[in-house]
Length: 134
Figure 1 (cartoon, rainbow, N blue to C red):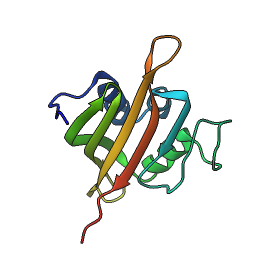
Figure 2: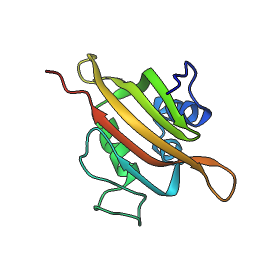
Figure 3: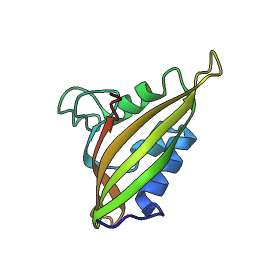
Figure 4: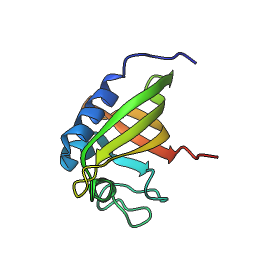
């Protein structure tokens, strides 16, 4: 499994959107039929109107940003399994606006990205799980 020091373009764009704090920009990287199972909700979610379990991708990111500012992502590892299939070890960082204290959540994840009919690459599947400390 090759290890890449540089992020694939789609993950660069997603990471920049996360750092911007712009929920619409983040969500724009997910394809219309995308599914997300993130670190803070233990359920699969899709776009509004495509709700496999009642949640939505934008709702997930709104919840992720609640009570946090300066949210950004750093990567410890990115492995490319095949074109558009990426395994990542990453950390979400933020600052608590009330206390100024930093916070972090280490996670591993899978991104499956595809080209849509317009030729734009987007995220089809995103699964993220926190690292568990023993």
